[in-house]
Image 1 (cartoon, one colour):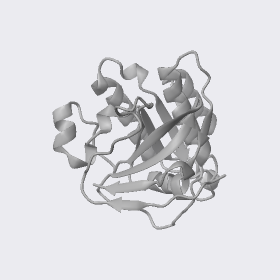
Image 2 (spheres, helix red, strand yellow):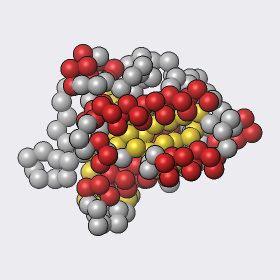
Image 3 (tube, one colour):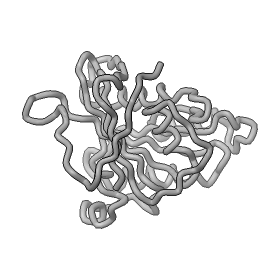
Length: 227
């Protein structure tokens, strides 16, 4: 089920005072969406936020920051979903992160969604490399930052290059990451994957609390910043 959302462009990188400010409300969840060019990560974000889909592939070299909201364990949380362009490597330090405008804020994400195209082997290799770089460069506490692997374009199942059970076993058993397959085109499992992402964050913050989630886009207007 989708709630109506309005995308409101904002100029520049003005700060956002989330619900986690001095009011004592829970801090915002920062979600980083990464993947190689053409895997459909922007389509996934647009489908989740607006229930909208376009066959035209996004080719932007800018990052897009979307603000929305969700209810987690009875508490309202701001969501900051950042759709990053295909980056060559994960920044190894804060200096590298902030010297490249495309990477700003990436090291402080609470959860990483790494998207690949189930019909493209190279896109899975990109995800594999990116996951390893995240673990190596985040340093202490990186193991506490959840990583969710997402196989997009399930509607093109016949063109799959790696058997699903092989990927699932590798990701879940060896990498210890969550795994979801979806279709942005047909809106299949898109809501599920964001639910899994937030549950993984909830499990890190509240290890003994079973996370229940309700996406409530009507709580606030979704806003998008192009940077």
